[in-house]
Length: 442
Ligand SMILES: *Cc1c(COP(=O)(O)O)cnc(C)c1O
Image (cartoon, rainbow, N blue to C red; front, top):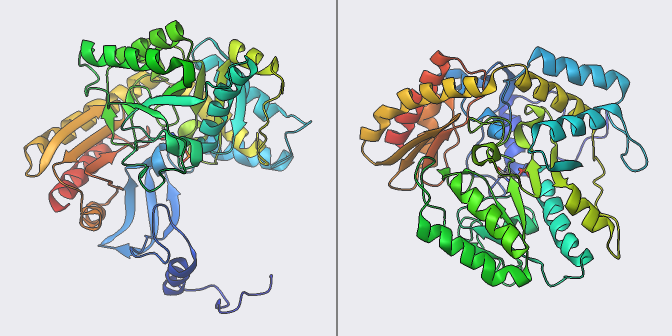
């Protein structure tokens, strides 16, 4: 036992002590310090259920409608994923990636190249989604610097996006949601198009498409890349748009000499009903980020993939290396479980499975359209959204969902689910019922 910190009680602390320590010392996402809303303490998780350390609002177990921020697609304690981690643990948990390599990372790169759009051939493993976006953007800026065009270092995106919480990703998040006003003068100033018109099935709006082309043409001389979340804008508002806009972006980028980055960290690995959202459009980006579901939610790992052209461009430059190398790059445990997770996805009819979830969510959420305070109900793949006409009362909505036996994490004016793919129809119905209750309460 290490020496105790002063003021920290000894022994296995009881629940009140744990929660008090949490409140005093642990900084939770998007929260103040000390925290104001007590989090629920999870003791264990199995299948699609979180087991709480104590009963909360009459529930000890919650169906996880969030899949741990969209990552635990196979649920918790999956035998194949457990075996991959423990098997790798017996060999080695980590070695540095500079000058060394290992089979789990090599096999992961092989799989990622195989499942992503064909021109993507090179894989940079990062330790989180935000870092993979940093790397993707560094690749793009360095590509142009190496080509003797260092002035091409701005980025174009559309409003309503989310690309992570580190600095460069923050600069391409939605300016309001990303709190750009707070950071004005500090964040790099990027170039924003309007939010893409809503609707996966909606026809491409000619005026919006023309605006995109015009913006790219006008700023191409100073722009390294366009970066977007394809088909679904996730944490920026759970909005769906036509894959047609991705084709517009691809054409305009090619015409004006701008790179195209797809951030598939949320949409990748089946979530939207295709293996990657780019597949809906039949479009390949120059650089692509994947993360979240890549390890089945077991460990933190993400990747930035690029084409031969991008890699060759960088490697021809005055500084012919990509100067990036996280300490835990290529972590063997994470790579091993990512390989097992991808194999599980490839070993089933994933599109069919996600379509099944989509039907269940459509059926379960349709009645929400008639509820008071509901502005919109939308479903795409394994994503179900109830949008209110007012900001959600987070505490009330969360409580209503917990009372209904479901874990949800609403934000903004949205109550949504991105459940594990292994959620059965009864549990999907329970998630939808809880979302309807949360919509009324929140
Ligand atoms: C979650 C997310 C990120 C950031 O990933 P982290 O692993 O949380 O750093 C980036 N882009 C998109 C689209 C995301 O959904």
